Image 1 (cartoon, rainbow, N blue to C red):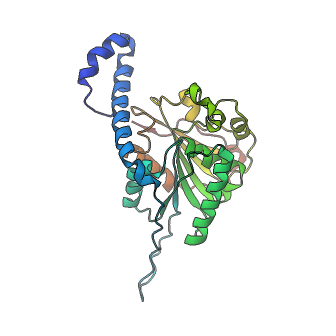
Image 2 (cartoon, helix red, strand yellow; image 1 turned 30 degrees about the vertical axis):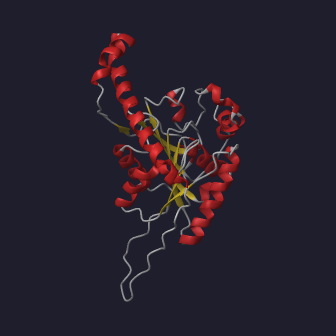
Image 3 (cartoon, helix red, strand yellow; image 1 turned 180 degrees about the horizontal axis):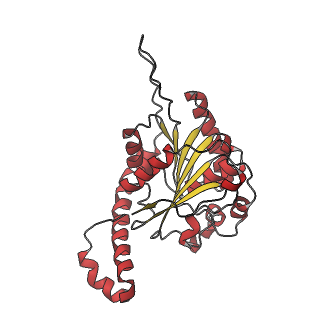
Length: 290
């Protein structure tokens, strides 16, 4: 994935700061950083709009006398935001999914004061049950950014949510824990996202028969993942695919159109109903967005 931007004024600085053997990486990092700053500025402007209650659009009713179309309805898509964020981060992704046939898209706003991933996962479970009851669907697809993906994974893997979650797509989610932002460790949820935390170890435990299909998008320039591979799903019992994204950072993952195309492809995959034991191992590598 190539990201272009106005980075020419930064070239001299990059040459001084980075050795020549890292010149290619440093330029990619500068471009990704410039994009992250632009996305952050736009997100700050949109953030207040994401604090308002979400409107539930009425389900379309078939016209009188019209024959039903022989097309199975796609599962609702639930969007789950990251740490100290809200649903506004998904404005562009939501529009992209709707333009490509996803008729029912909702998002979950959990409180920034939430102090436990397990509690947030229970809230997500109740939200999904309400959506299934309201729409008549038995399963949903979930897209989680950063912490949102970890919340959704805990629900699917540890709370029996694999019965409801058909496909879980995660974007820059610290599946094995991340070591960044040590100064923020005073917050309980940040501590839960550390390698070796009780919650991370719980996710490493056995998960036989988990029916959810996992697709994890991870970036080689994500400054919030330490190590970078922390955003990969690596579990012997989970049917998983890890998709490497090049040239963009953490905030760009739910925004970039190429990633959105990859998300649509992941949601359109038909997971097996009951993965066999020899197929339930995490498949690393897979597709590469370039």
